[in-house]
Length: 126
Image (spheres, rainbow, N blue to C red):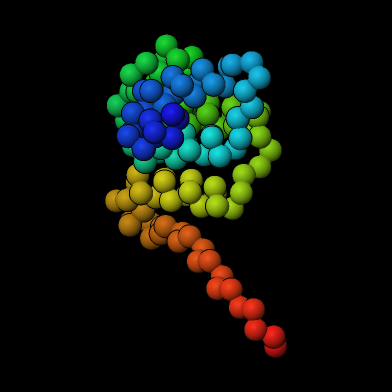
């Protein structure tokens, strides 16, 4: 359900469900859940200084409804719940922030990091 909201860009529903999941007893969130939420919000431009507020973010338990402080809040939650992320997750976050800030990225020469290609299977003896 969370992924569906992210795919639809329904950031209000993403934050509400994510906070509900996070506060539900017995639910353990994986680092990938945080990466999915943070990347989605970044791609939608909600971490910029002058971004529009996410409807219902305050009601969902966050102290702010957009901007860098919302990113800080989510990053602190992630650090409290998880020690590390995979390189693929780090690449996903990097690319989400690059795509959300494409104009600024072009000026500073930042580029997306491509996914690693799968290694071909080679069963021949050397």
